[in-house]
Length: 111
Length: 115
Image (cartoon, rainbow over all chains, first blue to last red; front, side):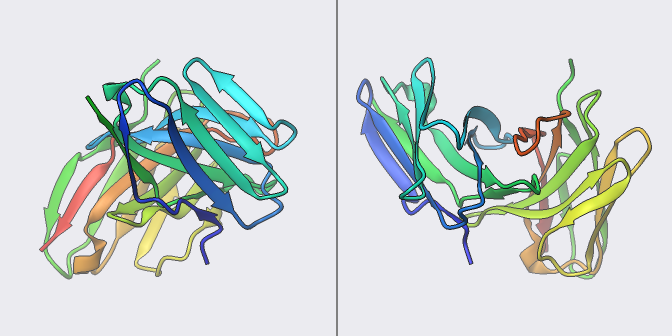
């Protein structure tokens, strides 16, 4: 059973517009959530995280929103740039520290 | 500070063979995790080592094994390779963390092709 789900395998967004990537989870024990970005032939790189005590965390063009009641988090990228084209993974952890990963969403930024 | 390094970067093996992959974590990191990535499957957790002990294990068959050395370097071994083992194998290390707030830093991966 997938505890972390990214239901959109791919997303295409116009350059300069907002990109919204979604992630749902089923385990209510998750209390820490992360987003990673992955380019082809490279390992994922950490992008932004959020603790369950917050509902929003912002870092430059990237903002993560957490809705605990809906067990849903989203990553907003504003404005989207060509270099943002990559696969984005969300991951979650509970107190046992093991990260559980989603399947990833491929973001394509169109010029 | 040097990042996570993995060797080799690319590997071609045939069915039935075995393979050993190596990972050197970031200096000071004691936790090393291994993942398998295949298209459409995201990152599948293999196992995690901390201070030379396996702390967590994913749902992979016993053909997949690993170990960690006293300098935190880690190896994973896959025996009796199958075609389905073709994947990108990623290693990640973690710094000392606040409880429940683990951030992992990944190496570039080893691309394994089984023929």
